[in-house]
Length: 134
Image 1 (cartoon, rainbow, N blue to C red):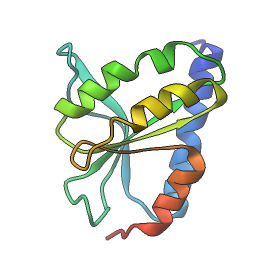
Image 2 (cartoon, one colour):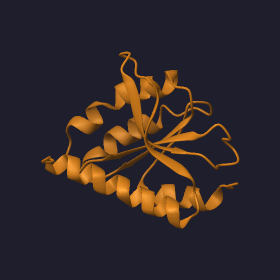
Image 3 (cartoon, rainbow, N blue to C red):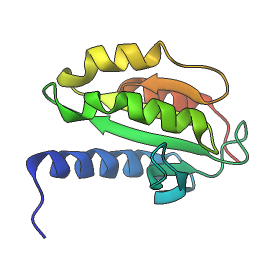
Protein backbone atom coordinates (compact mmCIF):
# COMPACT_ATOMS: atom_id res chain seq x y z
CA UNK A 1 0.00 0.00 0.00
CA UNK A 2 1.33 3.43 -0.93
CA UNK A 3 0.70 6.38 1.36
CA UNK A 4 0.52 10.04 0.43
CA UNK A 5 2.82 12.55 2.09
CA UNK A 6 -0.10 13.78 4.23
CA UNK A 7 -0.94 10.24 5.36
CA UNK A 8 2.70 9.62 6.28
CA UNK A 9 2.77 12.87 8.27
CA UNK A 10 -0.43 11.90 10.09
CA UNK A 11 0.97 8.47 10.92
CA UNK A 12 4.18 10.02 12.22
CA UNK A 13 2.17 12.41 14.39
CA UNK A 14 0.16 9.54 15.87
CA UNK A 15 3.33 7.49 16.45
CA UNK A 16 4.88 10.44 18.34
CA UNK A 17 1.79 10.78 20.52
CA UNK A 18 1.78 7.02 21.21
CA UNK A 19 5.45 7.17 22.26
CA UNK A 20 4.78 10.12 24.59
CA UNK A 21 1.77 8.37 26.14
CA UNK A 22 3.83 5.22 26.69
CA UNK A 23 6.68 7.13 28.36
CA UNK A 24 4.22 8.75 30.77
CA UNK A 25 2.52 5.45 31.62
CA UNK A 26 -0.84 5.92 29.95
CA UNK A 27 -2.99 3.01 28.81
CA UNK A 28 -4.63 3.62 25.49
CA UNK A 29 -6.24 2.07 22.44
CA UNK A 30 -5.33 3.26 18.95
CA UNK A 31 -7.71 3.57 16.02
CA UNK A 32 -10.66 2.65 18.21
CA UNK A 33 -14.20 2.65 16.84
CA UNK A 34 -16.34 4.40 19.45
CA UNK A 35 -19.64 5.00 17.73
CA UNK A 36 -21.03 6.79 14.71
CA UNK A 37 -20.14 10.05 13.01
CA UNK A 38 -22.73 12.69 12.21
CA UNK A 39 -23.14 10.90 8.86
CA UNK A 40 -23.86 7.56 10.49
CA UNK A 41 -20.50 6.04 9.59
CA UNK A 42 -18.31 4.21 12.09
CA UNK A 43 -16.21 6.76 13.97
CA UNK A 44 -12.63 5.63 14.35
CA UNK A 45 -10.69 7.90 16.70
CA UNK A 46 -6.91 8.15 16.93
CA UNK A 47 -6.69 7.26 20.64
CA UNK A 48 -8.83 6.53 23.67
CA UNK A 49 -7.00 7.05 26.96
CA UNK A 50 -8.13 4.49 29.51
CA UNK A 51 -6.48 5.38 32.82
CA UNK A 52 -7.10 9.09 33.45
CA UNK A 53 -8.66 9.47 36.89
CA UNK A 54 -10.79 12.48 35.90
CA UNK A 55 -12.27 10.53 32.95
CA UNK A 56 -12.82 6.96 34.15
CA UNK A 57 -14.96 6.11 31.12
CA UNK A 58 -12.11 7.20 28.81
CA UNK A 59 -11.19 10.28 26.84
CA UNK A 60 -10.72 10.62 23.09
CA UNK A 61 -7.52 12.06 21.62
CA UNK A 62 -7.63 13.20 18.02
CA UNK A 63 -4.31 14.22 16.42
CA UNK A 64 -4.36 16.72 13.58
CA UNK A 65 -1.17 17.84 11.89
CA UNK A 66 -0.82 20.07 8.86
CA UNK A 67 2.03 22.11 7.38
CA UNK A 68 -0.11 24.15 4.96
CA UNK A 69 -3.76 25.11 4.91
CA UNK A 70 -5.87 22.41 3.39
CA UNK A 71 -8.11 19.46 4.04
CA UNK A 72 -7.41 18.82 7.74
CA UNK A 73 -8.51 22.22 9.02
CA UNK A 74 -11.52 22.15 6.69
CA UNK A 75 -12.78 19.04 8.51
CA UNK A 76 -12.86 20.68 11.95
CA UNK A 77 -16.59 21.47 11.75
CA UNK A 78 -17.31 17.79 11.08
CA UNK A 79 -14.96 16.72 13.90
CA UNK A 80 -16.52 19.18 16.35
CA UNK A 81 -20.06 17.99 15.66
CA UNK A 82 -19.02 14.34 15.97
CA UNK A 83 -17.36 15.13 19.32
CA UNK A 84 -20.47 16.94 20.55
CA UNK A 85 -22.61 13.89 19.72
CA UNK A 86 -20.03 11.29 20.74
CA UNK A 87 -19.98 8.98 23.74
CA UNK A 88 -16.78 10.34 25.36
CA UNK A 89 -15.18 13.71 26.02
CA UNK A 90 -12.34 14.63 23.68
CA UNK A 91 -9.10 16.52 23.31
CA UNK A 92 -7.73 17.58 19.95
CA UNK A 93 -3.98 17.87 19.47
CA UNK A 94 -3.49 20.27 16.56
CA UNK A 95 -0.02 21.17 15.43
CA UNK A 96 1.67 22.61 12.39
CA UNK A 97 1.82 26.03 10.75
CA UNK A 98 -1.12 25.38 8.42
CA UNK A 99 -3.56 24.58 11.16
CA UNK A 100 -3.08 27.44 13.63
CA UNK A 101 -6.06 29.62 12.64
CA UNK A 102 -8.41 26.64 12.53
CA UNK A 103 -7.05 25.39 15.86
CA UNK A 104 -7.73 28.80 17.41
CA UNK A 105 -11.31 28.63 16.14
CA UNK A 106 -11.73 25.09 17.45
CA UNK A 107 -10.26 26.12 20.83
CA UNK A 108 -13.02 28.75 21.09
CA UNK A 109 -15.58 25.91 20.81
CA UNK A 110 -14.32 24.05 23.90
CA UNK A 111 -16.70 23.21 26.71
CA UNK A 112 -16.25 21.26 29.98
CA UNK A 113 -18.32 18.26 28.87
CA UNK A 114 -17.45 17.32 25.26
CA UNK A 115 -14.48 19.14 23.69
CA UNK A 116 -12.29 19.52 26.75
CA UNK A 117 -9.29 21.20 25.11
CA UNK A 118 -7.39 21.89 21.92
CA UNK A 119 -3.64 21.72 22.47
CA UNK A 120 -0.51 22.04 20.41
CA UNK A 121 2.02 19.31 21.08
CA UNK A 122 3.87 21.20 23.83
CA UNK A 123 0.65 22.09 25.65
CA UNK A 124 -0.48 18.48 25.42
CA UNK A 125 2.71 17.20 27.06
CA UNK A 126 2.26 19.75 29.86
CA UNK A 127 -1.33 18.58 30.35
CA UNK A 128 -0.13 14.96 30.59
CA UNK A 129 2.28 15.91 33.36
CA UNK A 130 -0.46 17.64 35.36
CA UNK A 131 -3.20 15.00 35.38
CA UNK A 132 -3.45 11.88 37.49
CA UNK A 133 -3.45 8.41 36.03
CA UNK A 134 -4.66 5.26 37.74
